[in-house]
Image 1 (cartoon, helix red, strand yellow):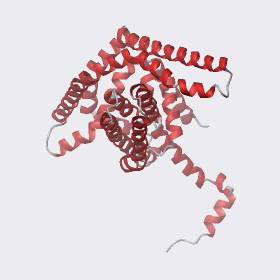
Image 2: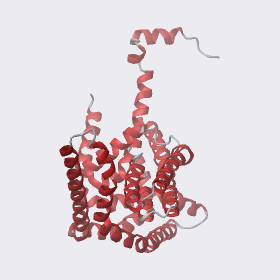
Image 3: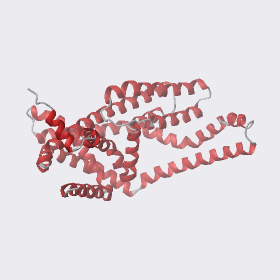
Image 4: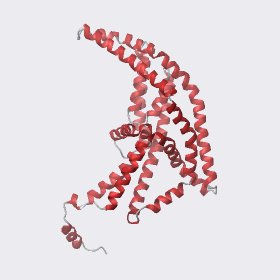
Length: 365
């Protein structure tokens, strides 16, 4: 392998290592980069209309964060009481679920030893209590942690500033990076970056719309059947909808647990289950094909793997950027596969055979 390749590999390893060691302070800077990337086409459109880059950037940044603040100002007062009420009623829900499962356990007693049935009941009760205790401690730790508070404040304060400078100087940054590209490989690298931009941009916009529509659907549909905490459940599903199947699974388990403890008739519980079946049909056969399609080019299993790997390596920052990185790697891997399928190694040709076949091919007139 020649020296330039080793140089790029070394720079890549050093860059990833730096990201790993600096992950605790990266969130506001990467969030600002994400905001600037999303808004750059709009600011460029403002420039075409005769507005200066600085003025267009200021307008977009102010509008974006005002909308975020307005959204939080409206949504948090609606969700906070439901979250507090849900936390206070979790033990009661656990007792109701255990009581409703008693007929099933009694039925199992005909096939299982009584002491084993009692052991199952005790284990379920113990684990539910442990989960509730762990969740309460986790929430309390998040709310009281000084590091979490500092990270939140840095996200609120630093992100708008970073996003402004990124967005204002976006074209200069792109031009500088373009000037640094090796001239021999410039067309190939630029082609790959254009494909990455199309893939990531299309997926991000489409998935954001899907998350919003899915969250609205479940919030409205579950509230129509009078399920408690329908707004909280809808928000949870909408936020987690970018993870294939995981958001719907978590929301389904949460909703069925609430329904089992709230309703006494099976019809209402069946209605909740039917809402999720219909939601999966709408999401899988209508929303995702229309708004997302196959833009990311990754199998759902690899999407889940990339999210888990990003979370393990870089925490929340890794989860936030796992899909864009996976999409970019997908573009590179598809390009490498295309080169491989055209290579003499794949075709089983030697250099002599390639020269012979090229000489035998008559020139086109």
